[in-house]
Length: 327
Image (cartoon, rainbow, N blue to C red):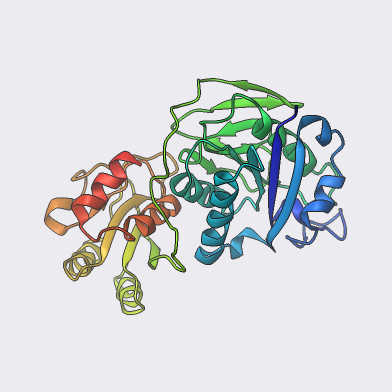
């Protein structure tokens, strides 16, 4: 008997319309999920499908409230007996952040596969149908349970923690920069590179939450001032992530102001704007002295996700550092 895969549509380029294929402009989040499925032959041979539309937006408009609603639906379906796996359609701009968030707030027993596209549904050589087909194949694969949330694009299967969008043009837009691929899929045939891990519970619970703590990301650069740090704190940020230069460094003025923010109870995380980076504690900056947290290999966007979730349980920077060490 074929496995049951439930699809959650959120929009994105995969659901987008391009009025004129001779021009790059298009509108994301136009077509509903059932319209996308109707354009992919052979899906019924892979799995028994059901679906629902959560939102229909470009993923640049994804926010915490939609994340929480999405997590609620994923967990409801995963806890029930009606489906075996989930597939989410999503825009690529913030896909890696949504995938990482879901990997932290859902158990890994039920596969959750997230797919997107770099070309709109009406574009010449649209990549969405192929990604949908392969995504369903991955979700329905009998070896998928225990792998939790996965990102599937252009025939490659990524862990959300390591997947990064590295291209704004090509269909092969995501790379696992430091962790390696989980597997590959071609015309519905899945090859895994490693066995499934043990079943584990969610790292964080967001049950009952209607919002996440505000965390802002600031980019370090030559001549960095401290005004935006003050503005973020004044606006109510409970945490700040610095996309630092090099190994998470920033100007002396910014360090001094961030130290003040940390002393006042604002969690400060040092990440890096460099694509391949490792920000170690007390590396270029004395984190012990200033009360900062080092992000290790998490990029700024994912550091923000993890800090938001960590702040739902603690404001202790030592405990937050331990979270960044293990997640």
